[in-house]
Image 1 (cartoon, helix red, strand yellow):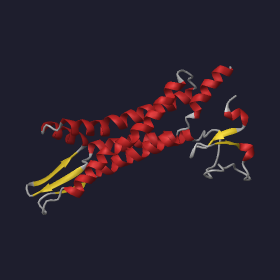
Image 2 (image 1 turned 30 degrees about the vertical axis):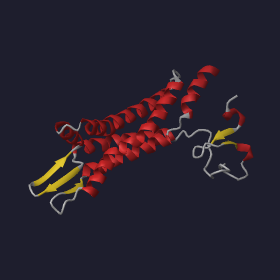
Image 3 (image 1 turned 45 degrees about the vertical axis):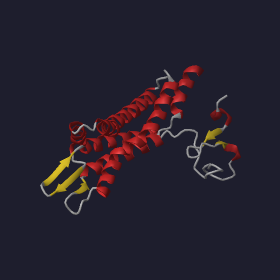
Image 4 (image 1 turned 180 degrees about the horizontal axis):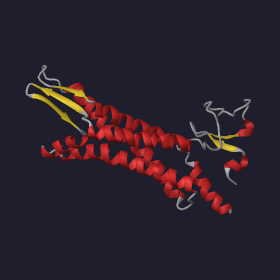
Length: 208
């Protein structure tokens, strides 16, 4: 028997398992441990996640086209995008830094967006194949999501440290703002996705 068939629900916030009938409150049931509203399934999460994923795709375009930072020196001003920054570190022999920035700023966001789209489409189409694989993919998006912030951290650290007597100054550019929006929207999208919907499709196939 599944928890939903026993009137039990897992709190999306603290993951406590609560029997709805035991909730002492009136009206909408709430978790007795953290106070979060309880629901067997959050079907509205699909629309929310779709909106966030689409927004992250829109933000990701200027994040790559616009410069991440401006470097002001006595010789002039140089602006670097994510890709030009990767190429710069490769040209200077800093292959490890180039690889980290490339993976964190290009591979990770694209991978996370594609996985979320795959999960959304599979749930909406009612596909029932490999629910465990889909569960692992969802957990993978949560695991890699925080690494998208590496590029933002690099810019922030360089702004704080690289300022030599007024000769060199680094400031964040508009590309960094859009990239931060990509990171935030994809992280929230992963949090809002109700992974229980994946298992509901598999259960319908077994019951049918």
